Image (cartoon, rainbow, N blue to C red; front, top):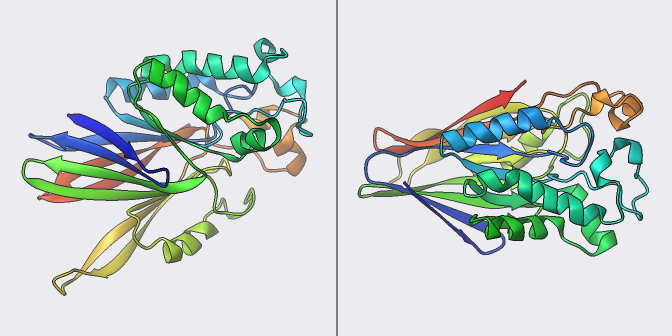
Length: 282
């Protein structure tokens, strides 16, 4: 199996090649909030170990960092920060520790994208935490690339003489709010209209989880009608907000959230590229 990444900033291309069989899993993770006391690192590590054992690809889709405890952040609360990060070098130490934590999985991590927590730091503190983390991972042997708030990932499948692609559109959030009632599912209706070319549409941010496959009728280049599936996925992340009794989730009455990620499987079935999506949550 040969996996290679190319990137033009808006579209990340990942080549998956095999002369015997295409059956590749991709772990989609978001909203880790690594430096928060509420980050469930035990479950996070378990899922990273699973991905490594399967030689799966790993994509981190925004808010790896909580990063709310900088001196210019009006949301800052040292009570929500892990004790080892209570230092004047807060951002530096969090990046270094994140890189050390992810080093065993560096070769599996193919992309990390921006979330609202990272963009807030970039705006007010003039440092790009995601670019800094990616640089550290490249030193550890990763070919990781950095994506923006939204963009495309093309999985370029090459199996014997067949060539095809599966297209994933990602956005850290397209729901517009914390979506306490709808869980962000309303975004499915909007995105299915303005992203009609995607085989998978992936969102995070709301700390909720769903997989919603939508069947579509299409017309081939040969003028033949056929149906396919667009997979809409939202990943909940690894922050147990509800455990912070005076925290944001408690004050807003959002309730507890599931914890975990999604797994997509890329394969050829009867000589056609297929994708399947599952939630890996607790």
